[in-house]
Length: 245
Ligand code: 5RP
Image (tube, rainbow, N blue to C red; front, side, top):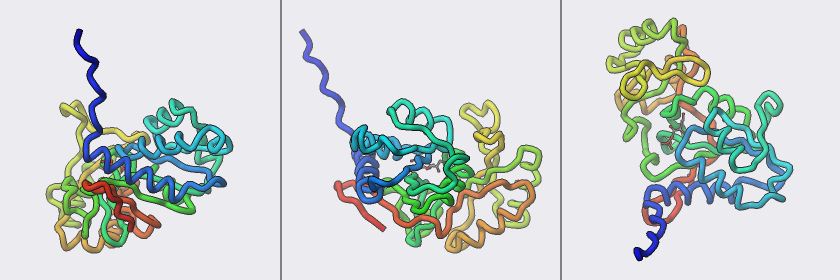
């Protein structure tokens, strides 16, 4: 009779995400806190995992606020109480992932097309904390995350925004994000399109400036660059340590 297969060990990358998430929860989720959970992101399930480990009693009074469908599903399936930003426009802690974080705690978000809601929820938080694996820890944005800055645009304006990104802001490779197998454009939870706009390294050294310029383009709803928002970032490392910035 064949022996049962042991559960496959968690990969180094997944372990680093888990470490970052668990450490951030342990440091920032206090008994009196309501917690907002912002996703779509591969690290946040580990945030939820740690919060669930705190126990039903600790979470009894807490309300968890998602940014979209997937985070809502996770909150509900984990037995946590669901809330809404309409009810709780001020929240104690937001824990979220990122595509890249620089040494000043500026970050790129929106790889999952969720950055508008994530920015709303990051702004609403007293404390906004980033959790990520070692690949996201960079000196300057745009180092490893090459698709560029995610930009949510109203569908009517996407061609004009693309043209302006090319001609005015010098991002000739900016492109409309397409769904898998190019079935059509990716549509955000808000019914908008996403443009990815890569910029040269010099431009990315001053992320606030380029973020503000993009935001001025008519038709742009939100830009996936978050500046001066995060209070701390937790990066899980390959060797099992956590870098806290
Ligand atoms: C979604 C996001 C995510 O936080 C970001 O894309 C990181 O995701 P992952 O952990 O899956 O790489 O901003 O809009």
